[in-house]
Image (cartoon, rainbow, N blue to C red; front, side, top):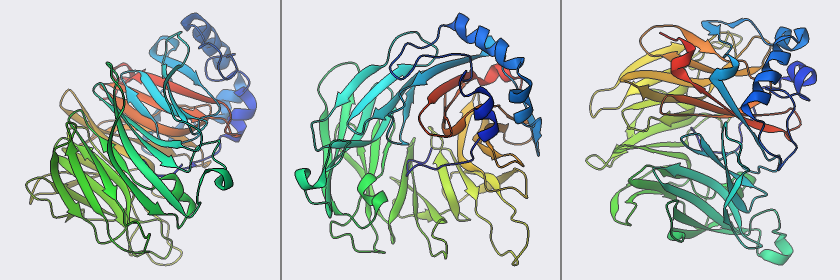
Length: 419
């Protein structure tokens, strides 16, 4: 999914009021407590299903999608620390990685009973703001000054931030620095995300912005093998907002001329064709499938008359040199744009995941196979903020309206009965 700053989508106020104290599967320990056992989860789920206020708060349907309520034995949950400080998360199987207090990476097994595990901690005045995982490798970005303890007057110049990219083999070994640089801080999001990082089992990609922070200029994007060899580079004409890597394909979101500043241009690049190729339409956010074959994005509205209903949807494109075939997968045409679309493939079938908007304005995880078939959304009693697929498992993270209580949910897509 996109790795930019937090995308706050929808507030499930009514649901939170009804069941926030119990959570998705009943009572849970506070931050740092043990994950509820499967038997406790099942009991809590039964109690929730008998709460009229809770079930009445979740809509029966969203246009074009069917509500699916997983059974207690179909879904796993893990409660996460409330002090998570970045929207950047990563997944290996059902092990989720996240950043706590701005200066350390922890992991939790979704559905397991073990406590969270500390992976990386950086010294005072340093901060971690991005984390990615693939295969047995973890990649992360460290900034200085940064982190929860970094007071500018004690830790450095707020006008400049240095960044380093690190790789860590989870099977053993010490972290290795693979790139570094300095960037002028021209906005809050630049201080948080001075560079953008993507990772696969064999390579990583990142943008290298100009140190001076000159507005509106382009950037170099580098693709490297995990052993440090340069695979290829490309050059953008405007600032980079996100970098994605899948198989042998690089995808990039860059700033686009827009009065609102929230629509981006979408590009692809390969080692055989490093020059950027443009996607047919601008996007609000985008995602590249792990194998690099499919590119998904939420379609930005274009050429509409003032006052007209905004028609939005999710699109998927087959990535091939000289041959782009687009398939639209629309959501409700009168609702807000879908968020965080992602393309995946299970057993040779392509499907999309995204956050769908209900008529109430609430947001829910959604799934639809490409080329027809039923689409579905899953009830989420808290506000979804992150979504990803690993194998055939759909995982999303949700938080309470106050942002303090967070939980990760995992469900096997094969168990949902989609066709």
